Each structure stands twice: as structure tokens, then as C-alpha cells.
Image (cartoon, rainbow over all chains, first blue to last red; front, side, top):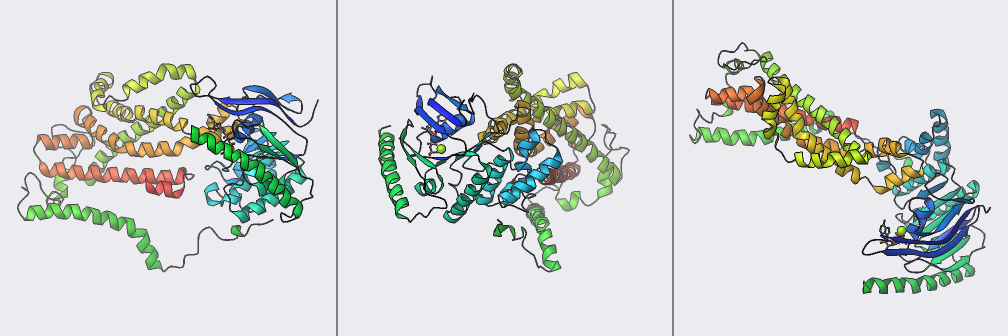
Length: 261
Length: 296
Ligand SMILES: Nc1ncnc2c1ncn2[C@@H]1O[C@H](COP(=O)(O)OP(=O)(O)OP(=O)(O)O)[C@@H](O)[C@H]1O
Ligand SMILES: [Mg+2]
């Protein structure tokens, strides 16, 4: 049995029986080891989100299989938590109730939920905001609340779909540092999707570059430099240049294809 | 790690004088008065210039002049004979208003709850949905007025047919609105619930229900006036009491003053209902951002 996440020969076609089937992912194989931080980098529409949904168990793969700790993934589970680009907190609940939502569903006592909320709010830097409502929070605070909600379930894998895309550059940098701290203390694996090369290089143990749709793996770039990383160091600049070249080709391709259709 | 944005209080300190605050509280009321004054002003002007026949279109200062005279025609018990009713005090007027209001309220409450239940049932139980949805869609376009004879056949006269008509006026529309709201719940909300371990029942209870309630409440408010129109028709025809009956009697006895007086009461009551529903909406369904509630 292999621990961690194992994606084997996965293909995904949307509307497979329809008039206009969309192949989103083709024959993709990727392993994420226990505690590893993997970043998916690829042009828009290449099937990154589709892959995350499959790993989360929200969608079925058309072909291939996903296993987690040796078990086939067939349905969603709190241990593979997904964080969306938009925080999508429930607007009718307070921040605290959003964070403890999964615990409530799991039938934990109110006292335990209370304790967990306090710990998590501190962890993500939202002490004192528990009684607020989502619409009263800034984008960055919302995204942290969503992170806390996922962490409440003590996930073994965090799946993050462009979690910081909607944030400004400064907030983004802080959130990245923050995520690294949480990841290091939680020992969870992370599979994070981003458009930003800098973000990928700041975070990843391994950057996986996707081809244009249907998504396949174009290149894998391991990064061994210790964190926090200095993006202006020669090593990082070289890596960034490399990623840019790889990604650039694919963006070009996907633009061409869009022009044709 | 703390966040500096947390330190700023949510509501900025208001250091206003008492007079300013009072003015702000009163502002909506002032606008209502202004709005009314324009209408009344035109009417009175038309009367003053002799354009409006005071017998057919008596302006407010005439039909509001002799209130006890008007009150005579109000009887909560309802007398169809007219002129010499047992009523006569302000209380009998309030009684008549209360009866009409009660019919509307009960009809609305029943319609709201049942349409919610049926709407959710249609989506929750597939077979039930397949059986019921075509029926609902076919019955929806039938005007409540067309149901009037049916109401009388089934319930005779009295309160039940009036309540039934109010119910019918909103039930089908609200059921279809419930379906459309359920279908429009953001897909992320549901995916998240699945990740958090919710089963179908829990998704409906903890996600879909709170997600659809605010919009449904707005729909209910928009159908409030339709409910009022229907109850007046029902009262005029089949109930024998209430504001609708008074209007009908006024028409039959050619009492224009009474017609307009009753219309005034209907308008004011409808306005009060709308305000009440607004208030309830703000208090109970706070999670619709304040801007949303304010807008509608
Ligand atoms: N639910 C769906 N039904 C049908 N087609 C879909 C669905 N979701 C995605 N697709 C299609 O699959 C392809 C890949 O979409 P996906 O969202 O996975 O891309 P992505 O890499 O996440 O893009 P982006 O970076 O812009 O978020 C797109 O062509 C999209 O139109
Ligand atoms: Mg995406």
C-alpha cells in the first residue's frame, strides 16, 4: 500500500455523450507524497480545476483511478478538503459557525466545537472575528476563514484551487507565508493550483507544469531551496525563467486553439 | 498573528446631535408624507377648480370630514343590508380591518409554508416531483378569481373560502419560485457541504433551506398585494364581512365617500403589512446583506 495521493492515468471528458464533448484532462499520472507540497501551474482552461474536483471526489474521472492511502476515491471526504477560489463561506452563518460546520455535522459537542473554533481562529489570525458575518470580512480574512474551516476537519490533503487569486499582492504574500506555517505544523499534503509562477516557486516542493487542454503533465520541477525563499536569488530567477518558458509555449497553444474554435 | 483590520470598529462612532438623529429617523416618514401630499394636492385642486364632481370623486377633505358618519357602515360581523349597521365606533372599523388582515395573514402563512414544503419535496423526492410538478405548472396560470366559485363550492361562505383564495393566489407561484431558488443555490455551497460530510438530508436542512429563504421572502412580499386584492374580491362576493364587503356595499348604495374612505383604509393597511414584512425580513433573515434588503 502506498501512503499519500496517487493519481493514475486519469482522463476527464465533460459531456462525454453530448454533441460537444470537452476533454479536460488526458492520461495524467501524478503522486503526491505524505506531507508534500505540490503546485499545479498551467494555462487557463487546461483542466486544473477539473483534476482537483476529481481528487476531491466531487466528480468522477472518465478513465483511470485516484487512490488515497491505498483506498479508491469515490466520494468527497473531509480528509481531502477543497478550498475554492472564492471563499464561499455560508453567508447565513457567523465566521465561527462556518468554521465548525463540519464538526457539527460530525456530531461533535458544542463545547468541543467552541474549543476548536478558538484554536483555529488563533491559528489563522482571526481572533475576535468569530461572531462576525462573512460579508463583514475582507477578502483575505474570508480566505483565512475558509482555510480554518478546512483545517477543522484535520485533512490529510489540502486541495486549493487558486485560493489567493482574488487577493492583492501584499495580502497574497502574507497569506502564502501563513499557509507555509500551517502546512509545516499540520503535516498535511497540499495540492495547490495557481496561475502565478512566483507563487508556485515560493510554495512548492515540486512544481507541475500542465500542457494546454486537455491537461497533461509537461514538466515537473523539484525545488529544494529552504523556505522562506528569496525570489531574487540567482537560483530562483533561473527557475522562474524556466517555468515562464514552459508555460509560455502552452499559453500560446491554448490561445491558438481558442482562435480556431 | 493578528490583523490590523480587526481593530477598527464596525460602526463608526457617530457624534451627532439629538436633533440630527431624530431628523434621520424621521426622514422616511417625511418622504411618505410628501408622496401622499402630491396625490392629495392634485385631487383637492381638481375639486377646487370644479373639475371633479364631489358626488362622484369626493376629495379627501370631504370623505374624511365626518368620520363617525363613515364608521356607521363598518360592522365586523358583517351586514349586507348596509346603511343601518350595528357598527359605529372606531373599534368596529378596526375590527373590520382586523378580519381582512387575519384572512390575508393566515392565507399567506399557509401558502408560504406549504409551497416551501412542496417545492422542497419536488426536488428531494424524484418520483414525487415527476408526479406533482406538471400539475403545479398547469394550475399556476389560472387566476385566483377563477378559483372563486370553486372556493365557494368547497367551503361555502365565511372565512375559509377567503383564506383559500389567498392561499391559491400565492401557492403555485411560490412553489415554482422555490424550485427556481433551489436550482440556483451556488454549486460551491453544496460541494462544500458534501466535502464536510453532509448527507442529502443535511444538505437540504443546513445549506439549501437557509440559502433559499431570503429570496423566497422577497417573493412573498411581492405577492402580498396580489393576496390583498384577492381577499377583497372574496369578501365582496362570498364572505359577507371585511373591507371588501364594505366596498361592495358602498358601491351598491352609490356612496362615493364611503368607497374612497374604504380605499384609503385598504391602502394604509397594505402599506402597514409591507412595512411589517420588511421588518421581519430584516430581523429574521439578516444574512442577506443589508443592501439587498434595503433595495427591495
Ligand atoms: N462542469 C463542467 N461542465 C462542462 N465543462 C466543464 C465543466 N467544468 C469545466 N469544464 C470545461 O473543462 C475545461 C477545463 O476546465 P477547468 O475549470 O478544469 O480549467 P482550469 O485549468 O481550472 O482553468 P482556470 O485556470 O481558468 O481555472 C474547460 O474547457 C471548461 O470549459
Ligand atoms: Mg480553475
